[in-house]
Amino acid sequence: MIFWVSRPRQSLVRLTSVLTIFCLTASLASAAESQPHWMINEGAWFGEVASCFGFSVAETAQRWRKLQAAAASSVLTGPELRRFFTTLAILTQHAQSTPADAATALQIFETGFIQGHLTTVDVRTLNVYLPGARALMAQGLGGKPEQLESVSNAGALLTSVAAVALGSQVEKLVTAQGQGSTQCGLWSGSAPTPPPDSTKGGMPTKPLGTSKVEQYIASIKSVDDVKRRIRDALDEDCGTGACVDVNASEICDLVAALDVRVDYQITGSFTSVDPKTGIAKPQPTIPVSQSDIKLMKLIFSQCKPTNYQYWKFDRLLHVVYTPSTKEIAATIRKAVGTKTQ
Image 1 (tube, one colour):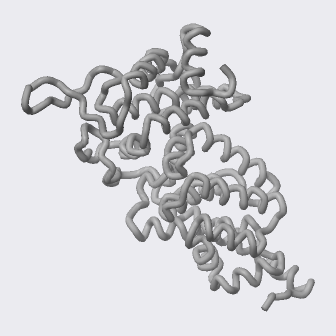
Image 2: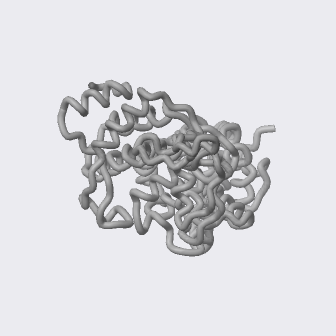
Protein backbone atom coordinates (compact mmCIF):
# COMPACT_ATOMS: atom_id res chain seq x y z
CA MET A 1 0.00 0.00 0.00
CA ILE A 2 1.37 3.40 -0.95
CA PHE A 3 1.91 5.78 1.95
CA TRP A 4 0.45 9.22 1.22
CA VAL A 5 1.18 12.33 3.29
CA SER A 6 -0.91 15.50 3.26
CA ARG A 7 0.77 18.81 2.40
CA PRO A 8 0.79 20.11 6.03
CA ARG A 9 2.20 16.84 7.28
CA GLN A 10 4.76 16.73 4.47
CA SER A 11 5.95 20.19 5.46
CA LEU A 12 6.23 19.05 9.06
CA VAL A 13 8.27 16.03 8.00
CA ARG A 14 10.63 18.29 6.06
CA LEU A 15 11.02 20.61 9.04
CA THR A 16 11.71 17.63 11.29
CA SER A 17 14.26 16.40 8.76
CA VAL A 18 16.12 19.70 8.84
CA LEU A 19 16.30 19.57 12.64
CA THR A 20 17.31 15.91 12.51
CA ILE A 21 20.31 16.54 10.29
CA PHE A 22 21.86 18.92 12.78
CA CYS A 23 21.52 16.33 15.54
CA LEU A 24 22.89 13.56 13.32
CA THR A 25 25.78 15.71 12.12
CA ALA A 26 26.80 16.49 15.68
CA SER A 27 26.59 12.81 16.59
CA LEU A 28 28.57 11.78 13.52
CA ALA A 29 31.31 14.32 14.15
CA SER A 30 31.75 13.23 17.77
CA ALA A 31 32.20 9.59 16.73
CA ALA A 32 35.72 10.17 15.41
CA GLU A 33 38.51 9.05 17.76
CA SER A 34 41.13 11.42 16.35
CA GLN A 35 41.76 13.96 13.62
CA PRO A 36 40.42 12.93 10.18
CA HIS A 37 43.20 12.28 7.67
CA TRP A 38 41.78 14.64 5.04
CA MET A 39 42.37 17.58 7.39
CA ILE A 40 46.06 16.70 7.36
CA ASN A 41 46.67 15.53 3.80
CA GLU A 42 44.04 15.52 1.06
CA GLY A 43 46.29 13.71 -1.42
CA ALA A 44 46.87 10.84 1.00
CA TRP A 45 43.16 10.79 1.84
CA PHE A 46 42.27 10.25 -1.82
CA GLY A 47 44.67 7.30 -1.87
CA GLU A 48 43.12 5.69 1.21
CA VAL A 49 39.54 6.21 0.05
CA ALA A 50 40.43 4.93 -3.44
CA SER A 51 41.62 1.59 -2.05
CA CYS A 52 38.25 1.02 -0.37
CA PHE A 53 36.15 2.08 -3.37
CA GLY A 54 38.39 0.16 -5.76
CA PHE A 55 38.86 3.29 -7.90
CA SER A 56 42.13 4.80 -9.02
CA VAL A 57 43.21 7.89 -7.09
CA ALA A 58 42.44 10.01 -10.15
CA GLU A 59 38.92 8.57 -10.48
CA THR A 60 38.33 9.00 -6.75
CA ALA A 61 39.29 12.66 -6.92
CA GLN A 62 37.02 13.14 -9.93
CA ARG A 63 34.04 11.45 -8.26
CA TRP A 64 34.58 13.47 -5.09
CA ARG A 65 34.45 16.70 -7.07
CA LYS A 66 31.22 15.61 -8.77
CA LEU A 67 29.57 14.81 -5.44
CA GLN A 68 30.87 18.07 -3.99
CA ALA A 69 29.37 20.05 -6.86
CA ALA A 70 26.02 18.24 -6.61
CA ALA A 71 25.79 18.89 -2.85
CA ALA A 72 26.90 22.53 -3.08
CA SER A 73 23.40 23.87 -2.42
CA SER A 74 22.61 21.39 0.38
CA VAL A 75 23.28 21.75 4.10
CA LEU A 76 25.78 18.87 3.94
CA THR A 77 29.06 20.44 2.82
CA GLY A 78 32.69 20.72 3.88
CA PRO A 79 34.10 18.22 6.38
CA GLU A 80 30.79 16.40 6.90
CA LEU A 81 30.39 15.75 3.18
CA ARG A 82 33.94 14.40 3.11
CA ARG A 83 33.10 12.15 6.04
CA PHE A 84 30.01 10.86 4.22
CA PHE A 85 32.06 10.18 1.07
CA THR A 86 34.48 8.18 3.21
CA THR A 87 31.73 6.17 4.89
CA LEU A 88 30.40 5.19 1.45
CA ALA A 89 33.87 3.84 0.67
CA ILE A 90 33.83 1.88 3.92
CA LEU A 91 30.37 0.47 3.14
CA THR A 92 31.54 -0.50 -0.35
CA GLN A 93 34.39 -2.49 1.16
CA HIS A 94 32.25 -3.94 3.97
CA ALA A 95 29.50 -5.08 1.56
CA GLN A 96 32.14 -6.43 -0.87
CA SER A 97 30.59 -4.35 -3.64
CA THR A 98 32.43 -3.60 -6.87
CA PRO A 99 33.77 -0.23 -8.05
CA ALA A 100 30.89 -0.14 -10.54
CA ASP A 101 28.43 -0.64 -7.67
CA ALA A 102 30.06 2.21 -5.75
CA ALA A 103 29.87 4.45 -8.81
CA THR A 104 26.13 3.77 -9.10
CA ALA A 105 25.60 4.54 -5.41
CA LEU A 106 27.47 7.82 -5.74
CA GLN A 107 25.38 8.71 -8.80
CA ILE A 108 22.20 8.11 -6.81
CA PHE A 109 23.34 10.56 -4.15
CA GLU A 110 24.56 13.09 -6.73
CA THR A 111 21.12 13.12 -8.34
CA GLY A 112 19.48 13.15 -4.94
CA PHE A 113 21.45 16.19 -3.81
CA ILE A 114 20.46 18.04 -6.97
CA GLN A 115 16.75 17.14 -6.58
CA GLY A 116 16.83 17.63 -2.82
CA HIS A 117 15.41 14.25 -1.85
CA LEU A 118 15.70 10.50 -2.43
CA THR A 119 12.83 8.48 -3.90
CA THR A 120 11.77 4.99 -2.87
CA VAL A 121 13.35 3.68 -6.08
CA ASP A 122 16.60 5.43 -5.09
CA VAL A 123 16.57 3.76 -1.66
CA ARG A 124 15.85 0.31 -3.07
CA THR A 125 18.41 0.66 -5.85
CA LEU A 126 21.01 1.84 -3.37
CA ASN A 127 20.34 -1.28 -1.29
CA VAL A 128 20.93 -3.49 -4.32
CA TYR A 129 24.37 -2.02 -5.01
CA LEU A 130 25.35 -1.52 -1.36
CA PRO A 131 23.55 -4.33 0.52
CA GLY A 132 22.45 -3.24 3.98
CA ALA A 133 22.33 0.48 3.13
CA ARG A 134 18.52 0.66 3.46
CA ALA A 135 18.48 -0.86 6.96
CA LEU A 136 21.41 1.26 8.14
CA MET A 137 19.77 4.43 6.86
CA ALA A 138 16.53 3.55 8.65
CA GLN A 139 18.43 2.83 11.88
CA GLY A 140 20.17 6.17 11.59
CA LEU A 141 16.76 7.86 11.51
CA GLY A 142 15.49 5.79 14.42
CA GLY A 143 12.96 3.80 12.40
CA LYS A 144 12.41 0.69 10.32
CA PRO A 145 13.00 0.20 6.55
CA GLU A 146 9.24 0.27 5.94
CA GLN A 147 8.96 3.64 7.68
CA LEU A 148 11.91 4.93 5.67
CA GLU A 149 10.10 4.04 2.44
CA SER A 150 6.93 5.72 3.69
CA VAL A 151 8.86 8.97 4.06
CA SER A 152 10.56 8.55 0.67
CA ASN A 153 7.17 7.83 -0.94
CA ALA A 154 6.02 11.21 0.31
CA GLY A 155 9.04 12.91 -1.22
CA ALA A 156 10.16 13.98 2.24
CA LEU A 157 13.42 12.01 2.58
CA LEU A 158 15.93 14.84 2.27
CA THR A 159 19.16 13.63 0.71
CA SER A 160 21.31 15.35 3.32
CA VAL A 161 19.37 13.69 6.14
CA ALA A 162 19.60 10.28 4.46
CA ALA A 163 23.34 10.69 3.85
CA VAL A 164 24.15 11.63 7.44
CA ALA A 165 21.89 8.88 8.81
CA LEU A 166 23.62 6.26 6.68
CA GLY A 167 27.09 7.60 7.45
CA SER A 168 26.52 7.66 11.20
CA GLN A 169 25.49 4.00 11.23
CA VAL A 170 28.45 2.94 9.08
CA GLU A 171 30.78 4.62 11.58
CA LYS A 172 29.10 2.82 14.46
CA LEU A 173 29.41 -0.47 12.57
CA VAL A 174 33.10 0.08 11.96
CA THR A 175 33.75 1.09 15.56
CA ALA A 176 31.85 -1.94 16.89
CA GLN A 177 33.96 -4.25 14.73
CA GLY A 178 37.20 -2.66 15.88
CA GLN A 179 38.06 -1.25 12.46
CA GLY A 180 38.11 2.43 13.40
CA SER A 181 41.82 3.14 12.93
CA THR A 182 42.87 4.40 9.50
CA GLN A 183 39.70 2.89 7.99
CA CYS A 184 39.63 4.26 4.44
CA GLY A 185 41.04 7.59 5.66
CA LEU A 186 38.28 8.18 8.19
CA TRP A 187 40.44 8.21 11.31
CA SER A 188 44.15 8.34 11.99
CA GLY A 189 45.47 6.04 14.67
CA SER A 190 47.24 2.76 15.33
CA ALA A 191 47.85 0.34 12.48
CA PRO A 192 45.50 -2.63 12.09
CA THR A 193 46.61 -6.01 10.75
CA PRO A 194 47.20 -5.82 6.97
CA PRO A 195 44.83 -7.67 4.61
CA PRO A 196 45.28 -11.44 4.20
CA ASP A 197 46.37 -11.01 0.59
CA SER A 198 50.15 -11.63 0.62
CA THR A 199 52.35 -9.06 -1.08
CA LYS A 200 55.98 -10.07 -0.71
CA GLY A 201 57.46 -13.07 -2.46
CA GLY A 202 54.43 -15.24 -1.76
CA MET A 203 54.77 -14.77 2.01
CA PRO A 204 52.24 -13.02 4.28
CA THR A 205 53.41 -9.61 5.40
CA LYS A 206 53.69 -8.34 8.95
CA PRO A 207 51.96 -5.14 10.11
CA LEU A 208 53.87 -1.98 9.33
CA GLY A 209 53.71 1.42 10.94
CA THR A 210 51.59 2.68 8.05
CA SER A 211 49.20 -0.16 7.25
CA LYS A 212 47.60 1.86 4.45
CA VAL A 213 50.74 1.15 2.42
CA GLU A 214 50.21 -2.59 2.83
CA GLN A 215 46.57 -2.19 1.85
CA TYR A 216 47.55 -0.18 -1.21
CA ILE A 217 50.05 -2.85 -2.31
CA ALA A 218 47.47 -5.60 -1.78
CA SER A 219 45.01 -3.67 -3.98
CA ILE A 220 47.24 -4.41 -7.00
CA LYS A 221 45.63 -7.48 -8.54
CA SER A 222 47.26 -7.64 -11.97
CA VAL A 223 49.55 -5.82 -14.38
CA ASP A 224 46.53 -4.96 -16.52
CA ASP A 225 44.94 -3.35 -13.48
CA VAL A 226 48.01 -1.17 -13.01
CA LYS A 227 48.02 -0.22 -16.70
CA ARG A 228 44.35 0.76 -16.47
CA ARG A 229 44.91 2.92 -13.41
CA ILE A 230 47.94 4.59 -15.01
CA ARG A 231 45.87 5.18 -18.15
CA ASP A 232 43.10 6.78 -16.08
CA ALA A 233 45.60 9.09 -14.40
CA LEU A 234 47.13 10.14 -17.72
CA ASP A 235 43.74 10.62 -19.39
CA GLU A 236 42.18 12.77 -16.68
CA ASP A 237 41.47 16.32 -17.82
CA CYS A 238 43.03 18.22 -14.92
CA GLY A 239 42.26 21.87 -14.46
CA THR A 240 44.51 22.49 -11.46
CA GLY A 241 48.10 21.90 -10.45
CA ALA A 242 46.94 19.86 -7.46
CA CYS A 243 45.12 17.43 -9.73
CA VAL A 244 48.18 17.01 -11.96
CA ASP A 245 50.44 16.51 -8.94
CA VAL A 246 48.20 13.87 -7.33
CA ASN A 247 47.93 11.93 -10.60
CA ALA A 248 51.66 12.14 -11.25
CA SER A 249 52.35 10.79 -7.77
CA GLU A 250 49.77 8.05 -8.22
CA ILE A 251 51.52 6.75 -11.35
CA CYS A 252 54.79 6.30 -9.49
CA ASP A 253 53.02 4.76 -6.49
CA LEU A 254 51.30 2.22 -8.75
CA VAL A 255 54.57 1.09 -10.31
CA ALA A 256 56.25 0.92 -6.91
CA ALA A 257 53.39 -1.19 -5.52
CA LEU A 258 53.50 -3.47 -8.56
CA ASP A 259 57.25 -3.85 -8.00
CA VAL A 260 56.54 -5.35 -4.57
CA ARG A 261 53.92 -7.69 -6.05
CA VAL A 262 56.35 -9.01 -8.66
CA ASP A 263 59.14 -9.40 -6.10
CA TYR A 264 61.09 -6.28 -7.05
CA GLN A 265 61.78 -7.24 -10.66
CA ILE A 266 61.15 -3.67 -11.78
CA THR A 267 63.80 -2.11 -9.56
CA GLY A 268 65.98 -5.22 -9.85
CA SER A 269 66.38 -5.64 -6.11
CA PHE A 270 64.49 -8.90 -5.58
CA THR A 271 65.60 -10.81 -2.51
CA SER A 272 64.02 -14.25 -2.91
CA VAL A 273 66.53 -17.09 -3.23
CA ASP A 274 66.17 -20.51 -4.86
CA PRO A 275 66.76 -22.95 -1.97
CA LYS A 276 68.34 -25.52 -4.30
CA THR A 277 70.88 -23.34 -6.06
CA GLY A 278 71.24 -20.48 -3.60
CA ILE A 279 70.82 -18.07 -6.51
CA ALA A 280 68.51 -15.05 -6.26
CA LYS A 281 65.28 -15.82 -8.09
CA PRO A 282 62.15 -13.66 -8.14
CA GLN A 283 58.94 -15.11 -6.72
CA PRO A 284 56.14 -12.81 -7.93
CA THR A 285 52.68 -13.10 -6.38
CA ILE A 286 51.02 -12.04 -9.65
CA PRO A 287 52.14 -12.99 -13.20
CA VAL A 288 54.19 -10.50 -15.18
CA SER A 289 55.82 -10.70 -18.60
CA GLN A 290 59.30 -9.45 -19.42
CA SER A 291 57.81 -6.89 -21.82
CA ASP A 292 55.66 -5.49 -19.01
CA ILE A 293 58.67 -5.35 -16.69
CA LYS A 294 60.52 -3.40 -19.38
CA LEU A 295 57.61 -0.96 -19.70
CA MET A 296 57.31 -0.48 -15.95
CA LYS A 297 61.06 0.11 -15.69
CA LEU A 298 60.71 2.85 -18.28
CA ILE A 299 57.82 4.47 -16.40
CA PHE A 300 59.63 4.19 -13.07
CA SER A 301 62.73 5.80 -14.56
CA GLN A 302 60.61 8.89 -15.24
CA CYS A 303 59.63 9.25 -11.56
CA LYS A 304 61.52 12.08 -9.96
CA PRO A 305 61.53 13.72 -6.52
CA THR A 306 59.93 17.13 -6.09
CA ASN A 307 58.73 19.46 -3.35
CA TYR A 308 55.93 20.86 -5.53
CA GLN A 309 52.79 21.44 -3.44
CA TYR A 310 54.59 19.74 -0.55
CA TRP A 311 51.85 20.79 1.89
CA LYS A 312 49.56 18.09 0.48
CA PHE A 313 51.93 15.30 1.50
CA ASP A 314 53.40 13.90 4.71
CA ARG A 315 56.95 14.80 3.70
CA LEU A 316 58.71 17.70 2.06
CA LEU A 317 59.75 15.61 -0.95
CA HIS A 318 57.52 13.27 -2.91
CA VAL A 319 57.95 11.43 -6.22
CA VAL A 320 56.07 12.35 -9.38
CA TYR A 321 55.94 11.05 -12.93
CA THR A 322 57.76 13.59 -15.11
CA PRO A 323 58.75 12.29 -18.59
CA SER A 324 62.14 13.55 -19.71
CA THR A 325 61.13 13.88 -23.36
CA LYS A 326 57.97 14.00 -25.46
CA GLU A 327 59.08 10.81 -27.18
CA ILE A 328 59.25 8.88 -23.90
CA ALA A 329 55.87 10.28 -22.85
CA ALA A 330 54.34 9.20 -26.19
CA THR A 331 55.85 5.71 -25.91
CA ILE A 332 54.39 5.21 -22.45
CA ARG A 333 50.99 6.59 -23.42
CA LYS A 334 50.82 4.24 -26.39
CA ALA A 335 51.86 1.25 -24.27
CA VAL A 336 49.14 1.78 -21.66
CA GLY A 337 46.52 2.74 -24.26
CA THR A 338 45.58 6.31 -23.39
CA LYS A 339 42.93 8.14 -25.40
CA THR A 340 45.44 10.68 -26.63
CA GLN A 341 48.94 9.65 -27.69
